[in-house]
Amino acid sequence: MIRRLMKTFFYNLGYKVSRSNNPLRTFGESLRQLKMKGFKPGTVFDVGVADGTHDLYKVFPHAYMVLIEPLLEYQPDLENICSQYTGEYYIAAAGAEAGKGSLHIGNDARKSSLVRMDVRGGVASTRTVPLVSLDGLIASRDYGEPYLIKIDVEGAELVALQGAVGVLEHTEVVILEVAVLDRGGETPEFCEVISRMKDYGFVAYDIVGAADGSPGALAHVDIVFVQEDGRFR
Image 1 (cartoon, helix red, strand yellow):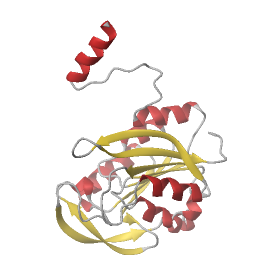
Image 2: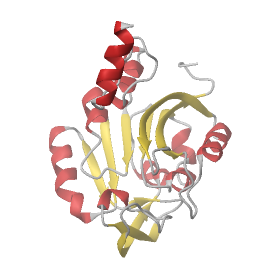
Image 3: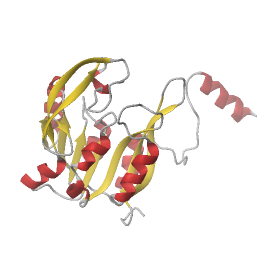
Image 4: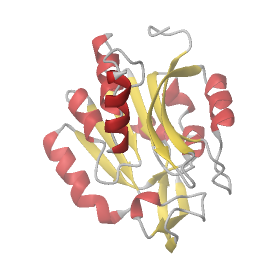
């Protein structure tokens, strides 16, 4: 009775009380769990950086960071990250192949997308940006293995992976933002992403970073994928 009252009290304040062994983890907790199991990526590909995926860098500070972000406005953040960790950055979006693409920039720049016109807060402008492929990057550089790939690009996650088929052969962990609600346009939904990752040889391992949409339904989650036949299975 007392426990239920306490949980209700904190829930009304906007907090949730759960057991310490609850399998639902935060993004940082999930990364630390991978590290505890012995995962040490040689290279981290952070696709869709904005001002940084700081939990990722803190948990794996000795990995080489390859930062890919299409908005020039975030260049100071990219430079700051590379001053703290070993790595490099590209002012570009990740695509199926190198070239140019039209980026729909949201009023909230974090919501910019190659495939969505209905970004949250509305589209402020459209800008032509360079496109790079992850396969193209590894063809010209000798990056340490294994790889970790994190992609958060507002619906274009599978587009980025089309240009990373070779990279995936040397990747143990892939973290994707995955839509649960229908976002419209070419944005893949949950079942399509799970199926495509299965085709690539990856299966879901953890679910973190849940976000609510309107009217209060689950909008998207971050899913941690691992090799189907890899060490984590």
